[in-house]
Image 1 (cartoon, rainbow, N blue to C red):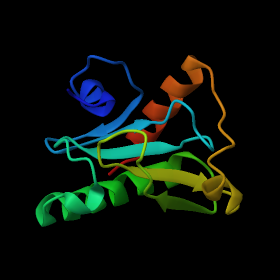
Image 2 (cartoon, rainbow, N blue to C red):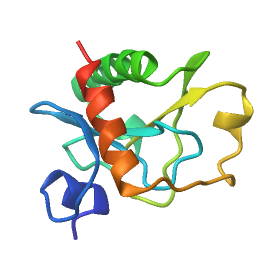
Image 3 (cartoon, one colour):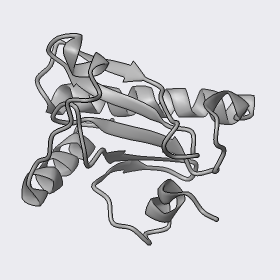
Length: 131
């Protein structure tokens, strides 16, 4: 059975897409810990990040770097934090979180919600800032 992330990639579930290429996909987290919280995933469905083949793993990191730079340009922050979790969804993924403080990255219990219009505008702004 396809993961929820594979369904997002396939367009079966809507998302606020930030970036996509032939191997990777980035979209806004719908329950962000901070404004701009983005998930970066390989299109290849593999449960555990460190089970990815070396080429896919390295490519995912490079894609995440590109997305993080766009995120940093679009959302005022001190840094973009990176976290790998992934027990809820069996699909390797990286969290990119714009940080004003470490609290923004470290306290995943503090989820928030933004109106759909704001999420759409934010996804577009980040996408426009990716080189």
